[in-house]
Amino acid sequence: MIKNICCIGAGYVGGPTMAVIAQKCPHIKVTVVDLNEARIKAWNNEDVSKLPIYEPGLDEVVKEARGRNLFFSTDVDKAIDEAEMIFISVNTPTKTYGVGKGMAADLKYIELCARQIARVAKTNKIVVEKSTLPVRTAQAVKDILDNTGNGVQFQILSNPEFLAEGTAIEDLFQPDRVLIGGDTTPEGQQAINALVEVYANWVDKDKILTTNVWSSELSKLTANAFLAQRVSSINALSELCEKTGADVNEVARAIGTDSRIGSKFLKSSVGFGGSCFQKDILNLVYIAKSYGLQEVADYWEQVIIMNDHQKRRFAKNIINTLYNTVSGKKIAFLGWAFKKDTNDTRESAAIYVADYLLAEQAKIAVYDPKVETHQIYSDLDYLESRSPEENKKGISIFANPYEACENSHAIAVLTEWDEFKFYDWQKIYDAMLKPAFVFDGRNILDREKLEKIGFKYQGIGK
Image 1 (cartoon, rainbow, N blue to C red):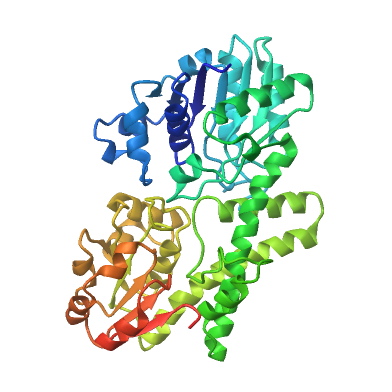
Image 2 (cartoon, rainbow, N blue to C red):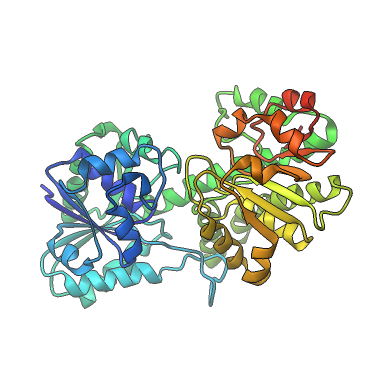
């Protein structure tokens, strides 16, 4: 029975996942390690409302387990040495250099972890891939461990996460499934069973699926690709709806009642974001191309093309509606996170819509209830479309949504935060320049109510 777990990586996956394992398995010591001292310090903050990651319910889980059997540390070697099972949960961004630039996953952090484990480990270890990885990455990890280790035995498992940010804790408490892939050897099956027993402390065993390691690695990419495909599909139809007079919400409801299709991920919007969808599809495209499967690659690449088009289309619609110029005009952004109930901004549609509008010399005013000021500037600076100084001149961040909207020409809703629905929209309208426009990129506001006040409302696909 596993008594000591280490997780390398204290990010959006490692932190919440290990916190729940620690809460549900009080007999297992769980240590989350990261070289980022500021991040670990934030995880150890006595005020759990100030954790580095915002996720509903996470603070209570950490509060219960931290100091009992959940620990956060920068001493990576010590945690590796003591652990019987090591989760690798580090970032695997899309490569920005060399072969596969813009598509392939950058595995340098995975390799660094493997080499550190190999250097430190003095006893047999089960190494669990938690990061999203290309197919057959486990073989590379195993080669490093077996050839540069200290003669100890390693078993490599794939245990991809299927968390949705904003509902991650609930997803961990009651997962649709837990997927564990490993070798078909007796030793591999023993390692699989060890991880099964960890999850079985709170997950029904009929929801714990076991496969070979390659199927597990590919299943994660495939799941995200299928979900993103549905978003791009309904967004493609939203543009057709706008041209024909159909209502995309009514179309989605009609097809969603078909049991073969279902209603999930059929909400039209300004486009998907987050750390997984685009990265995983690009990875899938690269893998297909590397095997010479050009038609397969083209098929999945179109999902990304459609998503990028939707963001550009939204920005162009704002420009066209505001009399073909936004130069010097104040556009209020409600929301910067890629979705509600998270402070994660990776690949958020708001970043790219802002970039397009700033290129037209618009003045952007941003309000988001959870995203910090430095992150918003950092997101724009990362694009390198203009200098950091130019970005700071073009964009302002507000702690109050009413102040963000005051004297603005238009409001763009970029995140579906529930609080936006309950604002005093009459007050907002009175403080705006007229005519006052609302561009609802998430289709969450009451169009009839806003138009009755006097707003000129535009949703997606209506």
